[in-house]
Structure formats: C-alpha cells, structure tokens
Image (tube, rainbow, N blue to C red; front, top):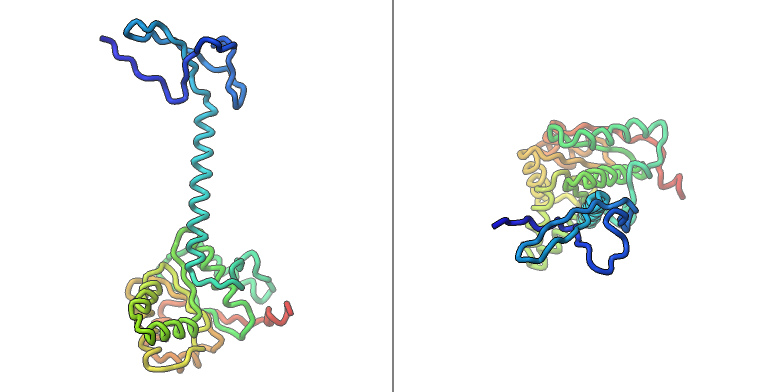
Length: 264
C-alpha cells in the first residue's frame, strides 16, 4: 500500500466553490501566484489539488519569531534594570545622556571601553572625585549597558545598603541579609556607589571585606564611586580592602565642574 505524506501545514486543498483556478490563485498577503499540485488520495477518495504555501509565509513566521525574541529580550532587560538597584532619578541614565565636556570625555570613553571589553580579567573601575560630577550617572550607564548585553549588573548605594542590612537583622530576618549578600557577591558586575560615606563600624568593614574578597577570589569585577581621594579612602577602609582594589581596579579622578549646579 502506498503511504502518502501529509500536506505541508500551509498547504490547503482546492474545494468546490473556489472561484480562481490553481493557476491563477494568488497569496492573500503578497499576491504572488501560488503553485498547485495534485495528490491521488487512497481509499477511493480521488484526486485533490493543493496550493503550496507561499514563500512569504516562512518569512512572516521568521519575522514574528524575531519580534517575539526581541520583546522577550526587552522584558528581560526591564526586569534586570528593575532589580539592579538603579533608582528612579537615574532610571534613564546612559552614556548617550551624559553631558560631555573636554575634561569628562576621556573618562567616559574609558567607561565605554570597559563595557565593550567586559569581562576582561575581572578588573573594575574606581571613579573618584568631587560631588556632582556624574560618577553615579556613569556607574548606572555601565550597569545599563552590561544588562543590555544580558549580563547581571548591580549598583548599590553603600550607605543605603547598610541601612537596609541593619534593618533586616534588627527585624530578625537574617535570610534577607543573606539574600543581599548573595546578590552582591554573585552578580557579573557590582558597583559600590558612594563608597566611604557609610558609618564605619567593625561590622561594616567585615561585611565590605566579605563582599569584596568573595568577588576578588572569583575574578568578578567590582567598580566603585567615591567622593574621597584614594589616600583618605584607604584610611577609611583599611589596607586589606584597598590592596584588593588597588590590584584589580583602574582609578580615574573625575575633576570637572558639578553637573548638578550646571543644570540648576
């Protein structure tokens, strides 16, 4: 007995009442003339003429698949940005929205090169300088650019992080504190924003050491922003932390007029 392969999903038979002959039938989407073929069906069912699927249908399915994939990617980016620690004020911060000056352009270019070369050897960036120069903006721009490459980027304001951590421990929620530590130690790139402004205690230094050392051991890049010069930051953080940062990070001094005052 002859076994016939079923028609392709886009093929359909000619039926009584079809007004156009197979030779003149056109695709309802692009108007291209459709190819016809006839099969002799078994069990005495006789011949049936089928119209082949138009090539444009495969193109339409591919375009729809690309659109779905792009939407899924955008949803992933939105989800990661929401969980990245980027606050509402900096939600739209990017390299494109940073106000360039002759003084800031070299640092911005270095930050962009850092993203393009990520992960590299696990090195991070240290952006130091006076308040208002856009260090947080650049840190967010780096985080956003990495997220758009489907990497896990996280930025935390250090004083706020320790306030949240203390609250979790005071409320007898150690699991919340552990979740925060896993987030900070496990992400692809971490930014410690405004490092040096936190209230110094033995617990704070131990926690910072735990985070930085875990990332150091796993070659995960950690970048920082700070208003302190590196000597003062060393006195604040201590030698063990600064030695690790000195080994892994490239430091840049952001010395240009305050963007906050310029935009006021």
